[in-house]
Length: 193
Image (cartoon, rainbow, N blue to C red):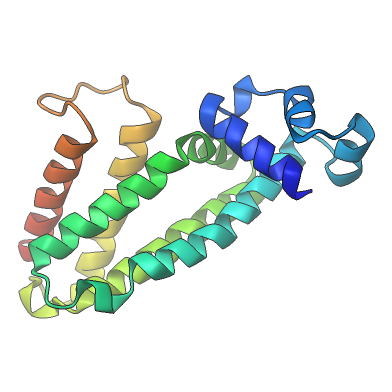
């Protein structure tokens, strides 16, 4: 099963879920039709398994990224910029998977729950890190201010990656420009909600 998932993940990241067939995945993994269908009913069940695997991997990578020791002694600006870089790079590294998961979540409530679980892990971890700067965060409810800022950031990151030509992006040439502008906007949001 691992070979199938590894092949599927690699091909989906490279080309997108809609552009990869079961036969291509099966051939790349070196398994027969029977072996594939003994483990997965169809492409949708393969996508569900990929999403579950991604959820488990995300838990580990988010825990590393939001280790509070990593951010100790950093300013709010440095922390926000670093967290945006981490979130953007993690999304960018698995862009094809994210696109497939978002598309599946539109019609599949179980896929939506799994996608929400991944986002919830990120939100909780980033919130803990940013609460270390609560004295710099405006408003009487810093946790709520942080939560809203993170949700906006994740939405912006997904929009940036999933729909790169759908919206005019004046002055944003690449991920660096985007990360800088997003970080600056988040710091302003946190300081002046």
